Amino acid sequence: EIQLVESGGKLVQPGGSLRLSCAASGFTFSTYSMNWVRQAPGKGLEWVSYISSSSGTIYYADSVRGRFTISRDNARNSLYLQMRSLRVEDTAVYYCARVQMAGRRGYFDYWGQGTLVPVSS
Amino acid sequence: EIVMTQSPATLSVSPGERATLSCRASQSVDNNLAWYQQKPGQAPRLLIYGASTRATGIPARFSGSGSGTEFTLTISSLQSEDFAVYYCHQYNDWPLYTFGQGTKLDIK
Image (cartoon, rainbow over all chains, first blue to last red; front, side):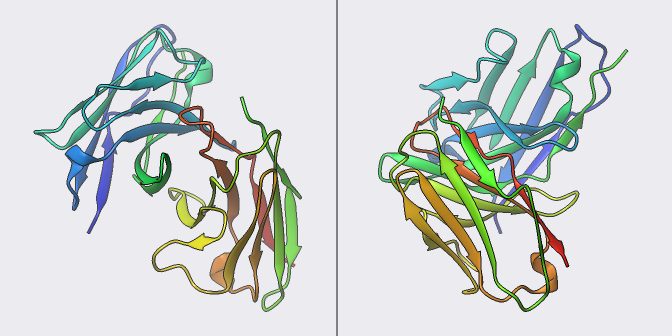
């Protein structure tokens, strides 16, 4: 069974830092690109960051570029999101999502259950 | 950035009836369009990819259509478990993925 399990979310003050993790199982993690997607309370979905299977290609949404860093450890079947200079508007549930390629494009076929990051003083 | 606009924001339908949800892209996304279902407190669940292909395990009452800028998700006969929020997602403009704002499907 394919599973993605996020962890690391907790209350943090504005300006603070936090590292999220996503543990993958049930598939060959090292062969899939991965993403972080977030959802503010009562709002829609917002793509945050992408990392290719080998970590050779990384992208960020404008809203987090320069503050967030995505990484992965294929030996540990884990995806990470290092978040710095957190703002109140970063408050959201953060999901990791696997990319399934269809030709040269990829959609998100499996999602974790999410981890909540409240940013508040 | 490709803007995805879903309509209506809320749709009230009775069980057993048909529901039709719309999604419009600000520019062509070919058929690189997915639909997700999300229930309260749960992660999104993939329903449709490639605009019209059902994901594994998705019942046949769910169908997707469209290409370019206009897309539709149809649920042919609503079951109680179908009442949820539905999002469309374009993955053509990779990796600048964008989602629609969602359509909430309510019990009438």
